[in-house]
Length: 312
Image 1 (tube, rainbow, N blue to C red):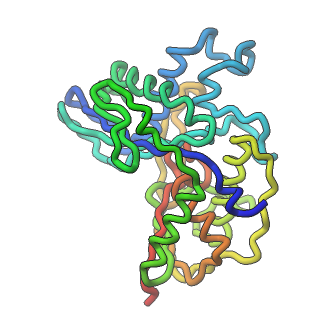
Image 2 (image 1 turned 30 degrees about the vertical axis):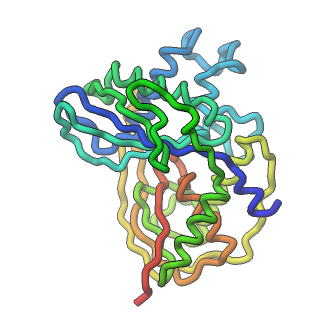
Image 3 (image 1 turned 90 degrees about the vertical axis):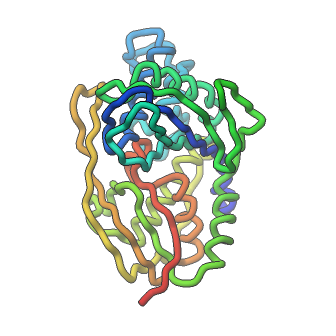
C-alpha cells in the first residue's frame, strides 16, 4: 500500500477552554485526570449495567465502548488489551494553583469513527465541570470549543457543526513538509511529553532513529485498523541517523479506578538533532506530531514537534 493511502486517516483536533469556578489545586500533569474524568462521565451517563464490560451482553452497542475504549473489529497482533486509539488529550498547562475565574486550555484529537461521537465527548466534559476535576473535584465551566483554525465550534452553550473541520493526516503531513522546507538546518524532534516505548524488548532510555520511526509507523498501522483498513506496513530501507540527543527521565502518576491503585508511568523526554532523515521516514514522523507515539498516548504521552536547527 502506498504511503499516501496509509495516511488517509481522518481526524479532528479541537481546543477546549475552561473557566475554573473556585480556588483550587490541580495536578501538574492534567491529561490523566481529564481522561479519567471523561471516562467516568461517559459511564455515569451511559452504562446500563454494573460497569463489568467484559461480561456485559450490550457491549456490541455500548456507547462507552465506542468512545472511551475505541472499539476495533480487527487488531494488529501486538494489540492485546483495550487500546484507546480513537482519541488523544493534550494539556501543556503545568500550573497547579488556580484562582476563581482562571482559564485552562486542553486539546482533544479524534480519529476515525470517534469523530462522529463529538457530542458524547462534549457532554462528558460538560458534566465533568459540574462533578469536578481531579481529587479536589475542582469545578469548571466549559467556555468554548474551537477548531485549530480558530473557528468557534461551541460558544455560549451553542454548537455550530458547520465549523467542524475533518482533515486527514496526509493533508497535515504535506502542509508541515512545505513549512519545514522553507527553513534551514537539520531536522530536530522535541518531546513535549514523556515517551514510553519498548524497542527490541526493552524500554528506551535513549532515543533511537529506528525506534521513533517504527513507533510512528505502528500508530499509523493501528489507526488504519481502527478505520477498517487491515494493512501490511511497508519496510523502510533505512532509518534516521542521530547527530546529538539530550535526554532526561520523567514519570507521572495516575490513579486507576479499575485497579484501585496509583499507577506509575515512566518515560523519557528531550531533544533529538538528526544528521539525516530519509524522505520515507519523514512522512511518518510528521504524522506522529498528531498521533503521538509509544505507550500511554491516550494519557498525552509521546507528544513531540519536528523542527530545524543548524548542526554545529
